[in-house]
Length: 45
Image (cartoon, rainbow, N blue to C red; front, top):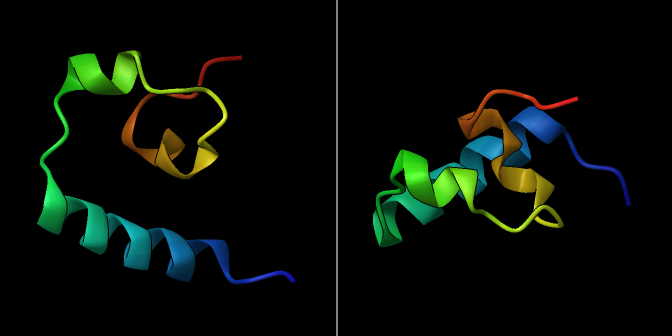
């Protein structure tokens, strides 16, 4: 099941922001198996 990533990201971000504001340190330590949050931090290769 493939969804539009931008649409999914926007929807998820809105829900997430409503629940909790993420700080940079939280993003740095975010679990790597939750790729939904990658737009919030620089992509690491």
